[in-house]
Amino acid sequence: MTSFLVNAQRSLEDGRFEEAKKAIERGYALSPDHERVRDFYQQILLADGVKLSRKARDMRRDEVRAMVKRERPSYQDSPEVRTAFHLAVTSLDKVLAVDPTNAKALMLKAGVLDRMDRKGMREDVMRLFEKALEIHPGNDELLYARERIVRSCAQCGDSGVCPDCQGAGEVSALLFRSRCPSCNGAGICKRCGLF
Ligand SMILES: [Zn+2]
Ligand SMILES: [Zn+2]
Image 1 (cartoon, rainbow, N blue to C red):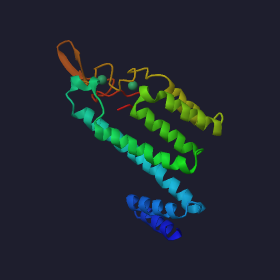
Image 2 (cartoon, helix red, strand yellow):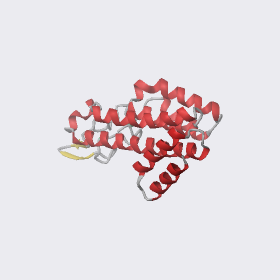
Image 3 (tube, helix red, strand yellow):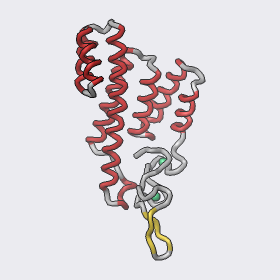
Image 4 (cartoon, protein in one colour):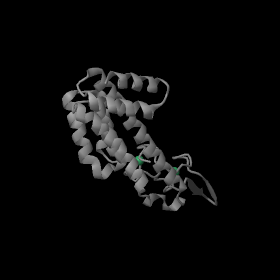
């Protein structure tokens, strides 16, 4: 109840995010109809979704970097990366369970699904955008994000790997190998941020 709300707010102010999350989840379970509890619960879980999705992406990037360069184009997510993405979706689904019209949650979820598996999830992603656009017709941010996601990446065709060096981060010119100028040596497509 409100004591949980106060605890959650205090924990967040002190930078203890996990404790804030635990407190507000408990508060929400006890009084789901309390408006401030419900608002704060959604706010924390949105932030959690963003945090977890960033973590999944960082893990994926580390895995790609740890691979032998020529094998990067065949990269598949490890079970750990998949779990991390699913946890991000779970947090956003909790927000949508409270308010199915929460446009921010719809958009963030679309973003996570897109990152997770652009080709496989495209239909689900589009459905989330349609739903968000029903709530906010003509919203520029939504229209722009949808436009970016609807087609495959013009640069890498959704492989996520830099097409100019095939993920090696280097290109040969004459007898020399030098840092790939398109990706700055990272081997990762700069345009879509899939990795
Ligand atoms: Zn790309
Ligand atoms: Zn490159």
